Amino acid sequence: MKKQVVIALWVVCILLLVGIAPTRIAMDKAATPDYKEVKATVMSAETTQVVNKKTGSRTNFYDVKVSYEGKVYDLINVHDAYSYVEGREVTALLSGDKLYANVEGIQTNTPMAKAYFVCLIGGFVMLMVALMAQSKYSQQKKAAKAAAAAEEMNQ
Image (cartoon, rainbow, N blue to C red; front, side):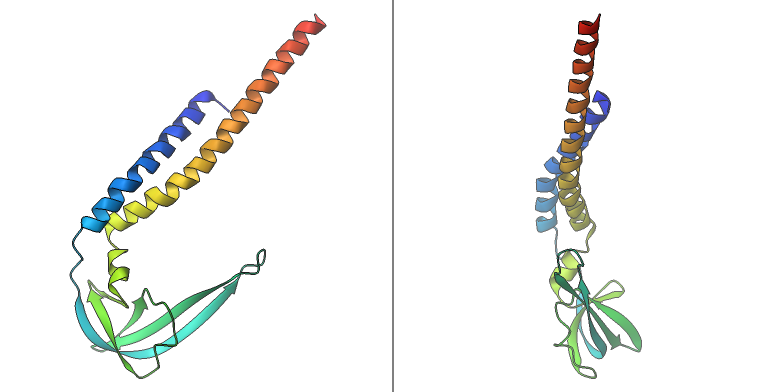
């Protein structure tokens, strides 16, 4: 591994980690996007449980479909399926052409929120990649030094 690659990885890592705070502040300061409270009828509500084979942990995914003004929508940012009984009317938030279960769903779907999550997740992933690259580079440097010392002793 070349030294320039390791340096580039560290630069990207630092840029992403430094970007976490400003993007979070901008995300929090951004005005809540426009939305309208509407009454929608629940068409279906399903829970899908996925099991991680390695750890045995379970994760639930909720798929709730609602009808509003003759169109069927996937309700976004649902935290459970049991609250959504088929045929019952629920309050949903219409923003753009999507229906959300709560305001947090709208806020985390903004461009600034996406930038924040890219910096947050990307920064920590790049930290791990940069640390592994640095370790590999150091091992290669030590091995080259040991090989050069062994060759010098043989001569």
